[in-house]
Image (tube, rainbow, N blue to C red; front, side):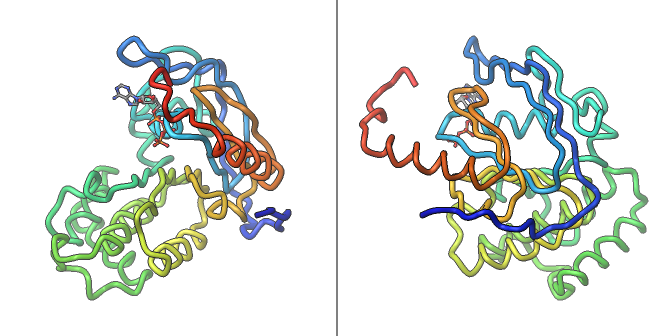
Length: 253
Ligand SMILES: Nc1ncnc2c1ncn2[C@@H]1O[C@H](COP(=O)(O)OP(=O)(O)OP(=O)(O)O)[C@@H](O)[C@H]1O
């Protein structure tokens, strides 16, 4: 597969700026991220890297869910780990498994919860929930029980809950793993319409074809960052080469 330079699908003015200066993150004595520095402004940013390279950890840092052990990390000039109120307006995050995200029994309650966390009244949150369901043409889901939904439908509930909050940036941590192709295509179509920024972690370079910039991590360090097509092509070549090895045997990784 060779990825050509695609014209950016999303011509938006509202870019987001990620600024990292010597960011490190240690956990239980292990260095997960080390000395990661970059500044990037774009509306569609991909993150690639092998298993365990630190992508999900970077996603949690970007969302302000954890603080770096060292260095400084800002989104649009804000330190979201220190400013949780700003974080709710700036960033939403979608995880791989909706069951790790959903806490309420019905669609309406799940979407309303985040809105109330942002400080909206119960009435405002209900109105915004209704408007979001209508935008997605899912008003008939309002009182649906989450347990009765398919995995793809649960993904869509999580997406609607995040989109309803209108964050400037949505972070997607491999949100389509395990979904069939039509479901994935439909969810991607919803996301492509999002007016804010997206930072999308994916193992599949095809997911990032129309993205503007890509960040490549390996073993907790930045390998490269730049325009999507050349980075993805280098990444694919490297992954093909590594596929011929047997480093999966190495327990020190
Ligand atoms: N809670 C934790 N405790 C100990 N080590 C952890 C924890 N979370 C992550 N790690 C380790 O940190 C490293 C990076 O993990 P992370 O999940 O950020 O990588 P990733 O690139 O998202 O991986 P994958 O593609 O497999 O999801 C891995 O070696 C992982 O084992």
